[in-house]
Image (tube, rainbow, N blue to C red; front, side):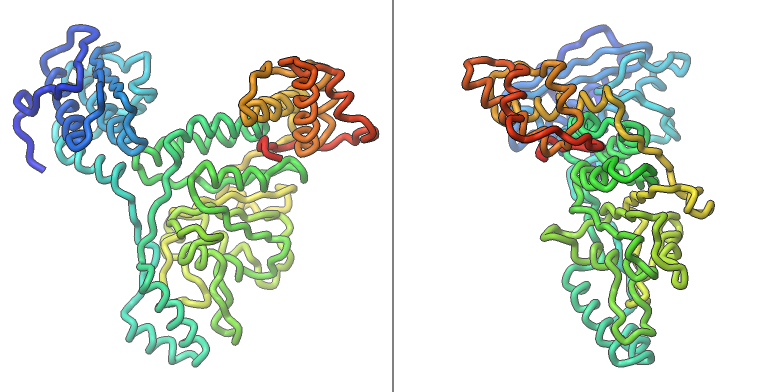
Length: 467
């Protein structure tokens, strides 16, 4: 893609109004018009009705903010966001390295490091790469194999059943291809993450420390692997349910769940050996190859290794396959024992493990995991969970009700399970509406509990508002 010199790159399109918030150096004006040229190119076929580009500076760095009506699509926002960020980073070096970074973020992001090789930076190449990463689906090679003739030769040297399995697997892989797309989070992932944190407040550390930066990089088209995570806590705090909610947040199919309490060897992850007559591929191979539950396969699914501390047998330790998946280098050349002639790149797979007792895990395994201890919610968090259930009900019903509950209702609700809380609050809302009120009162809770007996205290670890 060839470009004319920056000063002659483009005129401002008629639908766009350029507004300078402060006077900026001439070199930065070039960057502003470079950005306008990209915007004009992106919307040439279907321009917005109106738009405003604001250009200004903060602490020696250019700032850009574009608003359009109607708003750009999620993919278009990703492109514009990424390029604006890079141009603003470059402006700091054109104006002078002595200036500090801005105190306020550029489109919500603060550059964390100086760009490398600024003097040799190719803006045109960067723009092409940003468009490719954000607008086009990213495909990565997950499966590699030799020619069919070589595969058949090696397979036939083993036994007829193995040769048949390889032929069947290869026939399907030839249809689906060797590549798989990298699933990306939804454009509103930040809002979804905040909602998940409200629903599962005892998982806030995991979401903020590990998940948020991972999603931010994925949104910008950066190939980043979520570090393997271990969630440690007593039964009932919602570790497994959190993993399912995380899959929705990541934009991937439902997670592949492997319970180590039921595994006596590594077959679930790595298939069973060709030594056995009934050898079959493992769940990971099938998940990457064919997908699950009607969803197409992706290169970066979520795998949940449940009850890691309760592995059922040690004769054929299931941890052997897990060790290979935890390290990027070994995950790149993962093999399924049933089809050992096919190399699997599992380095993009996200891994979440759960355990009740960390002391039962060997130190080499613990050293490969980011460990988070999940405590039961505090009384204050329990109360907020109840309020979130109520707010979700009001929003779902689209009714004009006050957004909070009386403290006496919250105190009585926290001892119940989320499913029961949801059911009784629905009834409370009905009683309030019948009485012509826009708020739930203690008498509504009493009516909702008529004839139900004394509640038993339940451990609330995670709720989703839907029961």
